[in-house]
Image 1 (cartoon, helix red, strand yellow):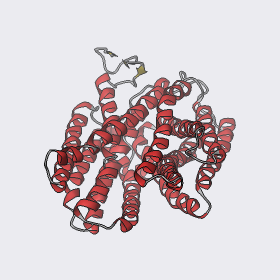
Image 2 (cartoon, rainbow, N blue to C red):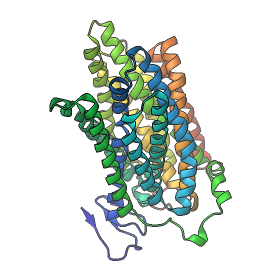
Image 3 (cartoon, helix red, strand yellow):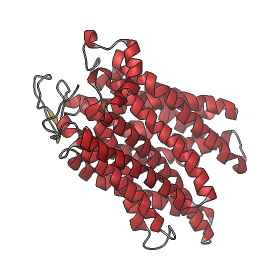
Length: 445
């Protein structure tokens, strides 16, 4: 599985097909992959736990649940916006491992408390606690993805992490989501089934915290005397955007994270609505919406390895611009869909999945190359902040376009914004392309 050298500071160590950065051991990279699988898979459980708590414990009427769920999601994103920057600065001062571990611990506490909420306000407080944990964990996952692979393997490493993200969501969310039904089937009350399931999820978060604490590399990528002053670290996220390539990565993150929400929210909504209009009952219509979402996700997972290979063979600005072009095409082509459940419509959602995952791969690979090593945590924190702003924009503006104009308008909006980023990418490629050869480029500036 991996090639091990007795000297961890030497170059040339590999984990499977991924070349590792100097000082990174295969077990460090393997731990990161475990984090990629569990972080996204465990954070996704909140989308299953929230409706269960609203129905079983708080007894909220169905007609009121939509607004509450939307408010919880909005508070979640606001909290993460506030967390990403400080977590990045902390990562550059005390280390990635500590922040990642604390993130899982916060998630564990939040999940353990979630079913004990006695009001919507209390549930919101627990959701904010969860958001702090998720913000810390996902920020560190992105940061060590920038730290651990050699620059020549960033694309392949990004593809591998993205694949494990997707598998984690499918395997863990489906497996854990079925536990409550299983416990009820064995004679437990719905309340007890919810308590037990949330405790299991919390336990998995604590176990993951222990794995991360044991397996990630200690310390920070630079020695203590090389660390930037705290004030400079705080400013470095925005200041780094003076590098046009980092600015391009930030813009791509805004699109890529917004893409993910648009696909996850509005593809499901469109398919479900079309099913109900066609006379299906709500359960069958919801299944149709999930089917369309599954098609986009599966297409992206199969496409991702090709993107990883491509991004390691071309100039990274060129690669990111190609990725954003695919994103623009994937979203704009959905405008050709007359009815999402028509027999041939699935092919357009395949293109949509390819575009969405390409945006993620391009943005993550470019920021990994360009983020300066001394302030990498802070810069990646700002990268994630732009992504969170993209999510807020996608949900707020996209939802209003969906209601006032129609489903197509949401996808055209994202496709049009992607074209703006493509135009900027072409300008950056002409004026500040960076290293033309990936193999001849560098790890830090």
